[in-house]
Image (tube, rainbow, N blue to C red):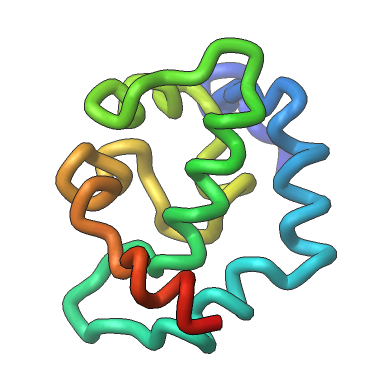
Length: 108
């Protein structure tokens, strides 16, 4: 079956594909999730949030946390961060009220 031009959606990944690939190779998301656990109501895990923050931080123009969701609009978030992940899942509340705390980092 051939897709018609109307069925094709183009999204950019820029250099984020390389950075995401390195994070995947290191199993960064899985390691963070293993250390911090998860909550049954969360849509995006703490590991995925950290990966998204790394993608933003290593970007050519990093967005402040309150604009982070806008940084990801038009990017292939499902390809970069995981199935079902949309830019609106990375809003300022999710990034600001992250499971990573100063004590968690120092404990390791």
